[in-house]
Image (cartoon, rainbow, N blue to C red; front, side, top):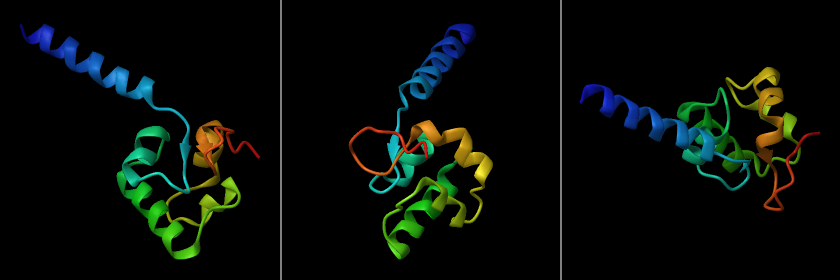
Length: 93
């Protein structure tokens, strides 16, 4: 029985990770950002949202380095998953 519960819990977690898609960092909630980007937990995602509220929308993906705790390496790892608008075109540049 314990193995069955572990299997179900693992399957649910794997589905949640698989279901995460590109995220618009200019409109998404902190929870959505944290679910979609690798290396970005809820606390960093909240800082991204706060930065956006204070400084306005991001115009380039590399502006994320201005958020405390977000480095270029994290941005590079997630480039294909970051959107700057809702047209579903990743901000690869």
